[in-house]
Length: 177
Image (cartoon, rainbow, N blue to C red):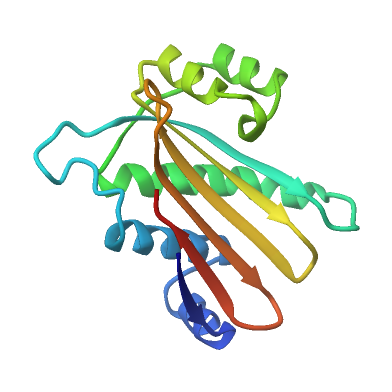
């Protein structure tokens, strides 16, 4: 595991220069981690993986109720990560049909479904499944995780986590599997 410390001042300056939102700043961090530390799909001449992105799950373990704006931010994060993954040219993003989206929504959460993410990826013709979690620990702490798994073998191909601490430095813990 590697820890990278970035101060909130540095993030604020980066936001002012490059990013219109904090969510996009987090995605910039994820993509930088992907570029420098794994997830190099397609760069060795092999076929680019077909990826089914199943979305982010919001987990609120804080003492406050979930606000509608937080749910809307998760949908924005879904859209933004899909755009960034597509633009990376490292994956072929597979569309998920509305009936499959309904099935996903009606069952257990992707992060707690005992391998259903692989089944959903296979249903849409993808060979990798991807999903994420956003955990609101408190108003000061937010944890964002992204996972990518081989749909056939179940082998984790990519797992990254970013913790955002609003009152201090940002700690990025990178877990490579």
